[in-house]
Length: 160
Image (cartoon, rainbow, N blue to C red):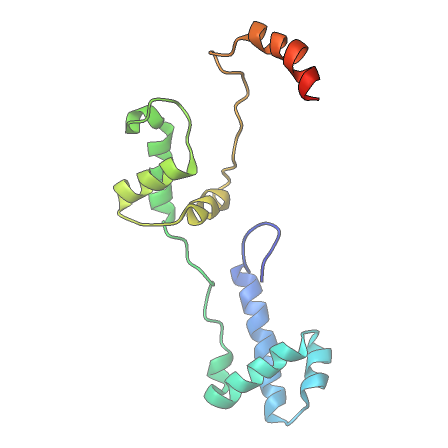
């Protein structure tokens, strides 16, 4: 399942879904039909069929929760250490400018924790801990306002 917040089910949500599967398992043992179970439990018939197949092959134990779909690559303690490293700034890690990019954070994780993770995994990790992407709040020091004004006055009308 995908959720707008980017995460999966919480531990409480997994327990609830497990109880629903156990209820379905008890009804499988009584010989109830898939459509009736699906309607009563407010799930899809396809899910009930999948659970029934698992129940036939492994009994009630096969309906137990297997835990979160994907565990985080870094523990909370490791993430706290990563935050301290990021707080030092990119220059401390060998980059000339003061911008943290996903690739740079990925490199810090690889060097510091010997963990190879994709940029998508880095993004999920940061999002999970409340980080978000940022755009610069101020203009670059190198920006020439006069040249920009001339460009807007002379070139842009021709382009438009």
